[in-house]
Amino acid sequence: MDKSPHEWMTPTFVPILQVRPESSDTFSIELESEHFPSPGQFNMLYVFGVGEVPISVSRAKASRYIHTIRSVGAVTQALRKLKTGDLVGVRGPFGRGWPIEKAKGRDLLILAGGIGLAPLRPILDEAARNIEQFKNVTLLYGARKPSDCLFKEDWENWERAGINILATVDATETNWNRSVGVVTKLIPKVKFDPANAISFVCGPEIMMLFCVEALNNQGMEEHNIYLSMERNMKCAVGYCGHCQFGVDFICKQGPVFPYPALKSRLKVREI
Amino acid sequence: MKETLYSLDIGDFERLLTVIQSHFELYGPTVRDSAVVYEKVETTRDLPQGWVDDQAPGRYRLEKTDSPLFFGHVVGPQSWKKYLFPAREQLWSVKKESAQVKRSANPQKPMAFLGVRSCELAAIEVQDKVFSHGTQPDAFYHRRRNDLFIVAVNCTTSSRNCFCTSMNSGPKCNGNFDLALTEVLDGAIHRIVVEVKSKRAQDLIAPLHLKTPSPAEIAAAQHAVEENAKTMARSFSTEGLKESLQNSPDHPRWNKIAERCLDCANCTMVCPTCFCSSTVDTTDLTGDNAERWRQWDSCFNLEFSYIHGGEIRKSTASRYRQWLTHKLANWWDQFGTSGCVGCGRCISWCPVGIDLTEEATAIQEGQE
Image (cartoon, rainbow over the protein chains, first blue to last red):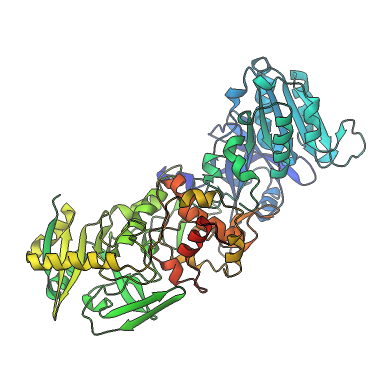
């Protein structure tokens, strides 16, 4: 394939190395890659003849990375039917990810809701690998029910590395010894130094708004809060106009933004 | 280069069209289905000679007159983006078996546009910026744009929906063109004064041995454009408009506009700067061959803002707000220019005659 200026609009087909169910509606696929996406970036995944969707990178290692996908639409359902060895078209990586360098030497609060944990897992991996570079690292995770909690097999590793995990569910099932309720209720339980802390948040917009408020109440300054936004991304390179959020193209200026950059628009309905 | 002027009679003009076509595919205005549209043209007979247009909010009517003018009309439903940024184009195709993606080349003879008005030059400049701002320049657009030869026309008449003087985009052509024509009518004498702006245009017309215009012709051409500027009926104050729109997402006027707006997307289709598109993935009946197309989309379409779980902009009010705020305000942040060039198309082609100048002014002035 020639590498004309249109490489970003043209997918490269790569085989699926592994498929892994994560919960009742969520699964992961591992792909071969020559790129190394930074945490928080996304790829456009194309299923032959069906269509394309933006999916964040949920783990990146040398020459391969993982996408974790919730099957909710035509393309994600088609992705779910693919097996090891099947080809997926990939474009990317796109967008600006989490400013992990800013988190080093500080308390790091990671707040995730549901599938929002996926784009934050590379941050947790990085923190677990280099825990001495951070002060207290805490994951606050909210899911619908215990069986929907993602990446449970990683939790033990993260905790062993020194990451504090507080999880909560909307409705409990058996074998759940953690919290019940919304994730914002966990925030006051975390001890952090507001003058030297940073927070990365990803989840439904309404959850992120309440998280910002709760973090604020604990003294976290707004410019230390980063949110990952979601809009309809079609081209991913800033031309199709679909992902506009006020003046920003989420695909290009985002998806991760410092909260003050979003503040005036987040509470505007239907923007 | 220094501007050079020539004076053409109809025979010269015909020869000019011929010489342009020896190097370019020539596109220009012509009458089809009761409207002036842009299509391939070959001779002056293809041009809308004598046709004038009557435009008002929600109104566009053509009328044939005895006037010898080729460009006595103003802008119709189409703009030049139909060639530079086609409504539908293939980006690539792929065979399932090989999984080798083949990019679409769309080879094309370089294009020449005849009859580009000052507002349209401004619109092309806006789209030049739009299609350069992404992760990489949009090669599909720039491939067509780079070789483009532009024969502009200075407007000596305006419609009731024109407001280029308010948007600093006309009626005199000041942008990036090769030749600019001004039609001058002195009694029965019809001449075209030509301004040559580029070296390649000078080279192109050199074999035609054109005449130098008389001082009276030059003065008449200048006067005709200046008079048009002075008598343009519509005006639109944009002072402070960007801030007003960006600070008024909850203005009650949005709901009021929504009572009239049909979400038809006409305004975005006729707008010469609107650039939103969608990607469409298809397969043939065998399922072995897939294609990706890019086609115009509109922020007025409900599914435009779809993400899992539903659309972001469900109400008409939010979609109109998105369009107007983007066009007149957010565009400045994104591209350093207004997205509006004052051509008036969105006003003429709105089936219910919504007037963007009226709506933007109402929001700016806090009217309900």
